[in-house]
Length: 467
Image (cartoon, rainbow, N blue to C red; front, side, top):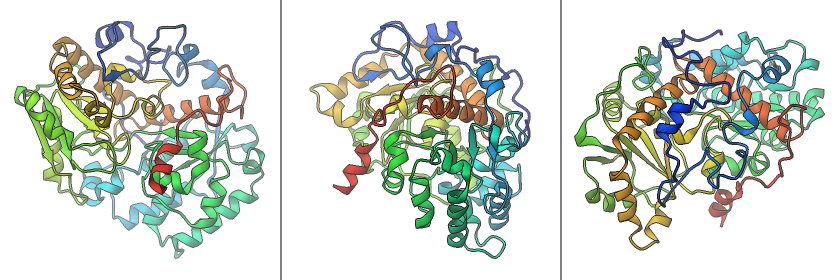
C-alpha cells in the first residue's frame, strides 16, 4: 500500500483474526471472565453476558476486516480536482512548514504539538490514492473522500496565492453543486476535522453541517460540536487515533521482546491537573495511596524540544500504567502514547461516553489493551471511592498487566501507527465508515441495522458549555 514504510516484522495480520481482532488466548488472559470491581467498566464487551455483542463492539455479527462484503463490494472515490485536490492541500502544508516527507523526527522538530497530533491526512491520503478499493468512477463509489481539510488548508495557506477563506468558499460551492453530495446530503462524504478547536469559513460549515461524515479524534470536543452540531448529534463521526511523536511510534519496534519496566514508576501521568472537566486534581489526593508514581503537573509545551519529547517517551515506556483522566475531552493523545509504549492506559472518563469514543471499535477489543473507570467526579462522590479505586489498581495481577502491555503494542502497530503502518490505520477508517454507512441505511450490506439519530449522548458537552 502506497505512502508508507513496510510494516514492522511479524505484525502483518498475525494478531487480528478475521473475527474482528479476538485472539482467544489473549482475550482470556488479558480480560478475566469476572468483571473488575467498581469503578471499572468495559467498553468492548457485552457486560451483561446476554447474547451477542452490540455494535460498535468487536465481534458484532462476526464482523471482520477481511469480510468479502467489505473487501470486494465496497469502494471509495477520492475527489482530486481543484479545489478538492488532496495533493494540493498536502503540498502547501509541507512547504509552509518546510517539512521533509517521511522524516518523522523532522516533523517533531518543526510542527508544534497542537498541529502534529492532528494531521493524519498527511499519512492517510497517500495510502488512499494507491488503495485497491479506490474507484475512479464516482458512480461506483459508496464513500467519497473530500480532499480538503480545514487544518491543512488553513495551515498551508496562502496556497497558490489563495487565502484559506477563499479556498473554503470554493470548496463549499463545489460540494453544493456536486450531484454526488446532493444524493445523500453529504452523508457518504468523509471530511477530516481532527482538531478540537478547528473552525472553518461560514459557508463551508453550513454545507458540512447538513450531514457529512466527520473523521475526528473525539466525539465530545465541545468546540467542534458547537460548529458542526448535526453530524455530532447524529453520531456520524469516525473516531481516529491521535498522531504520536516519532519517539513513541518507533520505526524499529521489536514486539517480540517484553519492555523493561521501572518499578519506581508503576503509575505515570504528565499534564495539567486543572482542566475543564474530570477533576484531574484528584490525582494529587490519590498519589499517597499508590506505590511508585511519577505524576508531573506540567504539560509538554506546544513547541516541545526533541529532548523533552524523548524524555517523555522514555518515562512512558518505563511505566506500567499511564493514567489518562478526562480533561477538556474524554480522551487525549496520552491514551495512544500509552498504548504504543506498552503502558496500560487507565482511562478515567464517563461510562456513558467511552464505548463509542475509541477508534475502530469494530476491530479493536479495547478492554484487552486499556482499563476504563468512571471519572473522578463520580469516584470521589462515593464514600471510600478513591481508596477503593487505588486499591483495585494496586491489586491488578502482574500477568494480566504483562498480557495487556504486550497486546497493546501489537494492536498499535496493526491499527494505530501512522508512521509505520499507515495502511492499517487507513483500513480501520474505511472499515468503520462502511459499517456506519450501513447502520445509517445509506448503503446496503450484511450489517445494516437502523441507527436512531439520538443513539449517542453527543449533546452533553455542547450544552454544558453554552449553559
